[in-house]
Length: 284
Length: 310
Image (cartoon, rainbow over all chains, first blue to last red; front, top):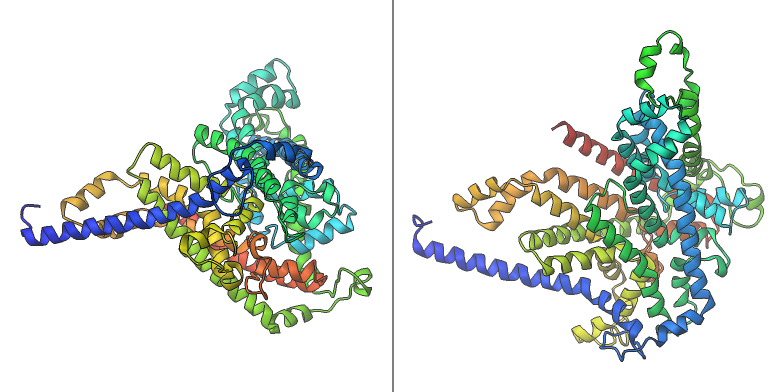
């Protein structure tokens, strides 16, 4: 650095400093952009008279008590839970069986098939396949029923699940199964008592990921369910404030927080434990 | 399905090989039973819709009326109708703008900027920024859209308060800009996380040597960082393009309005097919969307294969 003439060096330092200040200002604005809606989400539910603008709340818990009395709101959260857990059970059971078999039996072109399935699931998205999905579910007579929603959600999620679970299954040493076999255990028993416990981190990750996916999914229940009492929170929340111009902000703000909190908590626990391990289309 | 059709013909002839392949004693037939349910589900709800779209798109299928009971084959009429309809081209154009500004430029640049900004800081500031961005990504879309509706509200929205633009109806006067910013807010986390891990993998020695020869921050970025993470940039761009192209959530903010000004392709298909009742026409547009998805996804495959080879 000493070889550079002083004036040039000073100029470079000034420019460097200005660039850093400009960058810091831009990033602060971006940070504010991300923070503003979040602050409203956290503060408004605790305000006795929430408005659409950000303000320091007049602290109260009354809004939560009021929400508890609203049958639609609570039922929709229950519906979301039902859809999330239902999809999770289907996906984990079928995904584990398929991933295990694919990991243990050599099929020619197996990796190609898996990769093809994964590719397919990112091409045939909920949006692009909206019309045929709606039509198939109507033809099967499953419109306005949870079975239809569960099957569509599970079918879309399964390729990713199999792809990730196969990774976990591949890492289980085969010697465990060999010794289990020596003691006369059948394949189902091996899967249940040997493989599943070892693959538990993978199964747990998949379960949580599936619930988070389904919890926020709007489109599938929106086009396949008709009755308000069947709708999950994602759809009900949308109808809350479009039905009438008058929005009940005490109800909506509290509902928004109650609906977001579970996935936020789950997500940050998982992220802290496992870090950033997103494979391909982990969120659609 | 492939598994159940391959018979264990070699079992008697080559018992040793079979043992080495199949320690769990699963057997090909049972493996087929294990795989079948998942594959059937994927087949019906993922593979079949893709094929079915081709057929549906060539019928005059409607939600109600005569064509609902017995749809007729109309060949390429739907495609001709879609391709000559200005509102289809308008929607495609809007989608292009939306993907370009909210996905490719917005999410990628801001995601990179954030990853760059927090790479050398530790502690609560880093945690706070990353946490906020990630939270925006995790929050259900219905909630996120309401937060933005509140923020942009004409009478009491915080944005109008902060900018001193009281009375501005952002969603009516600037609908496209609104959903672009909304989508940047929702989706930037992925790019930020991806670039964070990419940046941490750039060899520090290369940055040090660049500093030694007096490269400015910009030169370091151009000559050291970008070449090192080129593969990540490509992967990120392709994935973001695919996801932004397919997102339906802007519907929650503007419902395609006002006057179709934010009717991106996903919303256009929905409006045509379900409230509009023209399932056949909707399917034809869906197929166009599927084909575009296919092109983007194949691009992604090529990039990720090229990266593996390196």
